[in-house]
Image 1 (cartoon, helix red, strand yellow):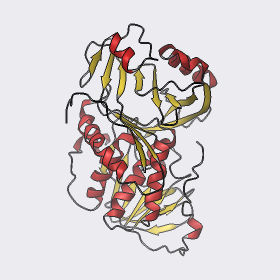
Image 2 (image 1 turned 30 degrees about the horizontal axis):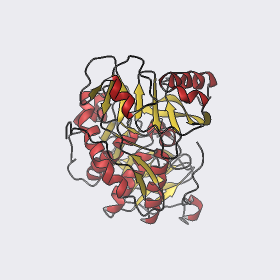
Image 3 (image 1 turned 90 degrees about the vertical axis):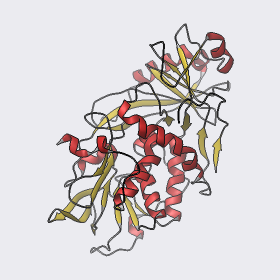
Image 4 (image 1 turned 90 degrees about the horizontal axis):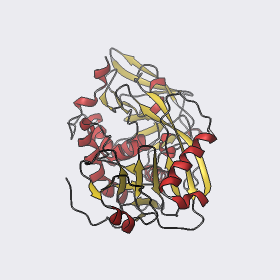
Length: 384
């Protein structure tokens, strides 16, 4: 089941560390396979939002799928994400807009398809208020001060230009927990704390996948390991991590923030439980895991300038995440490496948003069917 509020009535413009306790993930020691492992139809590296969504799509098509992850499934970049489904954000590259808009349209049905897992998905449809330097934002409605005060009384625009965008938001941890539950129910085998280390090939065709513990014969493999994609020998992908600080506040008095708030210096995402997720920095420092409390303090100060009542709130949690970034900040989708190898990674700041459309595209490609969308701009060959 899921929590979904009514979409705001507006004109139709155009058609990234706590442990989950919602399900028991299959442990690799419980699979009971011999060292000469049986083959799977598809092996996936990475149990984040992209890997789980693809696994579920393939399993629903009848494929025997297994996923390997270096840690706890759903606890990498997905666990750290804010969950803004910003399909038409002014900063989204134009070449990416067909994918972001298509995926945003898929999202309500994507969430509904996970109903029955027993996990409540926090999915909200109130839109976003976007602070932007220009006088016009594509797909946005410019608001005057009275309109801002009416729809979001706690927000202090301080004379800045504000646009209302029609977009949704989802709490990623609840979404990945629902995906995990659905994958488990349909028989997708999930191996936590067992990263894929290497791809074996012969005559330019994949023959096996080697994990940290075992070797699995396989004719098809998909690298969905996000910021860690480049660590798989034989299927190396040009990705690198971009660190981001985030934290969440629990207001002392619930004041009813409804919209996502986005400004160049800060974003705020309200949750159904009344807390507010706030982020995020963009730091090219590799896998540096330290939380800098001065950064959290600066973000909190920026948030409080826009919503003064947040000065009295309490910190609920603080964390960092690693966005998977490519040299041009666009995803890599399609075949890559030996025949039978595929990649779906490098989604950078749009991993949660692009999960439904990526699953549709990659499921078709892996099954030797035509892609439902043109992905020529996202081929890994652009880096050769």
